[in-house]
Structures are given as structure tokens and as C-alpha cells.
Image (tube, rainbow, N blue to C red; front, side):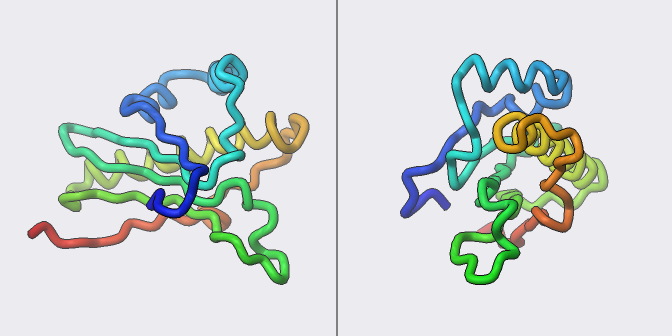
Length: 141
């Protein structure tokens, strides 16, 4: 996933859990404190754990969210990838993944408003349609 790119940003394993209990104001302060613009990176890697099940979310091409529909676009289409090593199918797990995905999109929209759209509150480019969730299925060998 990170092969061929120097623009990958890993996050701590508890980052997604902290997103659910902090406000958008705290998200902004944290990124400003670390002088970090997540849209300078091609890949954001976010480990996730819920009820003992571990997985990884990867946000790909978020910085291209406004350009990917333009004619001649040659970068990677923005998407949210969720990799589950043992592919849990329980309703509780599916709910946890979907709730985390929604929180990640909300976080991306807040960061976009602060970093790229001069706090235009109508700017919400990260939606289910513009940044779909992909969950590749694999087999445990």
C-alpha cells in the first residue's frame, strides 16, 4: 500500500477511538499543534481495534478530492480502504466499521475546511459517493 510513495502518514493505534470522544475543535487544535496538513500525504494509515478484532483503515488520495472528476485526472481516485485480516461478519463489527468510517469522513471534512477551503462551512467534499469505502475480501490460509 505504501510502496512507491514517500507520502504516507501512519497514525497511532488509538487515533480512531479518540476521534469518537473528542470535538472537531480539538481535532483542529491537535493538527495545528503538530503543524500537520494531512492533505500533503497520499496515504493515511489508521489502525483500528473493536472488541478484540484488529483491522486497518487507509485513506488514499484525499488531497485529490476536488480534482478526481476533472478531465485528464491521472492520480489515484480518493477512497477509503478497510482491510480486515480475518474478515469478521458479525453485525456488531459491521456497525463499528461503518461508524468509524463515518467519523473518519467527518474528520476529513473538518480538516479540509481548515486547511483548504478557508473555513467555508458549506465545504464537505468527503461523502459516501466521493470517497467510497472499499472492503477487499480475502481468505485466511
